[in-house]
Length: 463
Image 1 (cartoon, rainbow, N blue to C red):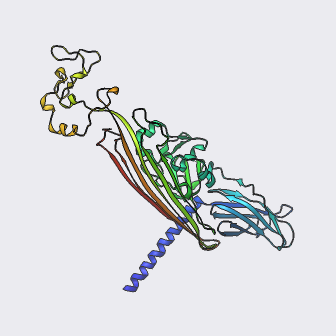
Image 2 (cartoon, rainbow, N blue to C red):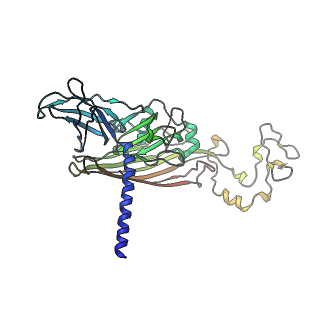
Image 3 (cartoon, helix red, strand yellow):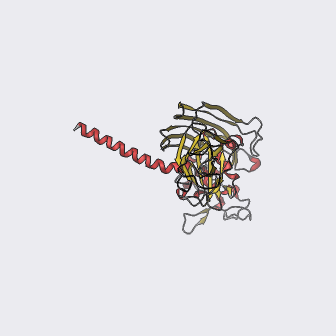
């Protein structure tokens, strides 16, 4: 009985691993690249059964194939990076093409023309290859250099998507109405709504099912590149009607590399808010680091990152609160003149009405009777401060409160090259944070009615 149980567990593990491998193949099609072309002789005739090999400069990863009877070859599932492609065939010199840079989802065409000679001889092309993009995907790739060098507010990589033709930022009305529900949305593309976008990280879905914005936002130092597809995307990107943003995280290489950083902002040179007597306080730090390298040279690599975010930012709010008289039910100041019956006769005044009466009845002299001053309303009024800004009106209250926003995120990626045909890649991303707004974005916008939010998200994938 004991042995049968162990056998059943083994079978279950094999099934799960098989399913994981199958899913991984599908995912890998979304965050890798392809090289194809034809191997020809000096006359332009096809060279069949030529050995074609692509080698990644950063890791030594190698993938090879053979040309068919028409001389065509195809190298698929290539991790992004810098490559060297070579071709060999009996009776011809070895052909080596340097300077091939592959981006995510790229299908690069590299034709090779062999010269007659000994296979021990080599024809090397040192200049960067001019690659042809044969797919009809409309979009743009943003590489790691642009991600790190271009200024980004809050180090949000998605802001670079606005450089793409057809991409437009969210309108102020959408951002205000959506509040925190719009935080993961960055742009609208080709007239589609922001909810129509899709976000991927290393080929895995990375969007919020509530508003279709991204959930995990890796720091720029952890992103190798990303590509935004805006139209006519291939079949594996058919989830939403808008754009698809495909993020590829960085991986390790044969050289150890890393960095540490701390980006900070404060209120030292800020101007004051119009309604504030002094500069709103601001203390913001965005700090972290990355580290990657080989576990086993040319075979297994790792990359890890961490980023913390701490923000303490003042926000000034001018709002309306009850006056001391209104707290006791005396709203007579709302009208400058009354009739002998207590009705407001001022054209600019306000007449209070008892809507609970049938039919509704005006309240004489805007003085609420005792039954309206119940203990519940008195307890609620205790949370409202007294007016403090007579320059803006007798009911005006001006305050500056501190908005608190903190988050931590980390991730790791391991790549193992099993053979020229098989690879294994694992990534795990995690983020956790909280936000406390002392002034509610809806309802009572005075201190004493704060709005808090905690969030946590993670993603694990095998390829």
